[in-house]
Image (cartoon, rainbow, N blue to C red; front, side, top):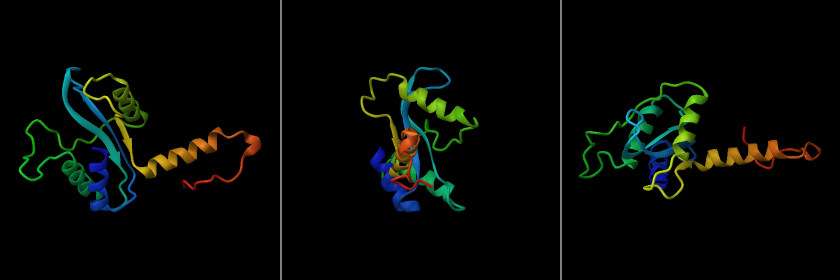
Length: 139
């Protein structure tokens, strides 16, 4: 899924777009197992990006591709309505919840986000006596 999302976004909105997602398999209404699905986000740089990104991620998930019809049970795009840190908290809880169907990494990020996070971590964990310019620019 990670590679399919990356390829679709690269082809649709250009290389280097910042994105992330979490794979989840639980219903927030019933708390019971449900179809595996993703929650995430991508950086919006220009007008029209929202629609392009939504279509790219739908294709990456196989919705409406080839002979595959858009599934009736699927919510293809639903904007998260909770503000601030609540969304990140929700995603991290989803990653920590055990699911025997998901044995591998359940959180994915673009290389742009990963390199920014690495540079930030390097910056804040350094001994203040060793502070210097970061080795990676993240701004």
